[in-house]
Amino acid sequence: GLRLVILKGCRRTGSYLLYLYRERDLAEVLGRREHRDFLRAMGYTPWEAPGDCLRQLAARLCLEEEFPHEIGVFLGYPLDDVKGFIRHKGRDYTFCGCWKCYGDPQAARRRFERYHRCTAVLRRRYAEGTPITQLIEAA
Image (cartoon, rainbow, N blue to C red; front, top):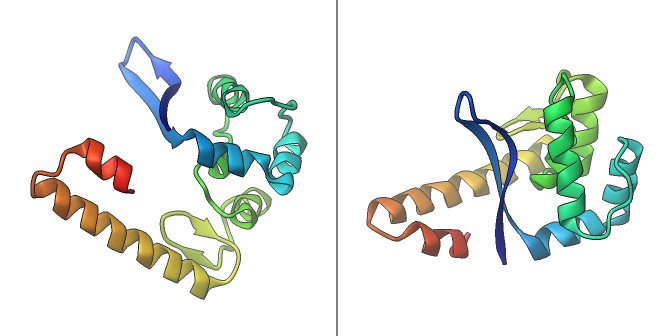
């Protein structure tokens, strides 16, 4: 169920932005009414499959001067944080960890602590020789 797509690439510099995702999970996120409504309000046209929506994100990454902050939806950030970041232009956040949060700072702190614990376990297992394919499946 894992997919890897190149969202943006430059052959001249060899720089690429890759997106690794679980198709089922992305379909579930993009199927939520609040996410669909938000992305449509941001200018996305209706999509049939997650790949259709990813192509629109890839086009925005290449064509827009400013980074499209709605990418947070695709990365699994809470929608309130994505909207808050856009509305406040990255300022006035309530907590900053892996991203800037605009809701309950205690809930954000707990979420980031779980991410850090998970990252530490995966790094340790990788250092012990666990193949990356097994780590991806476990995550």
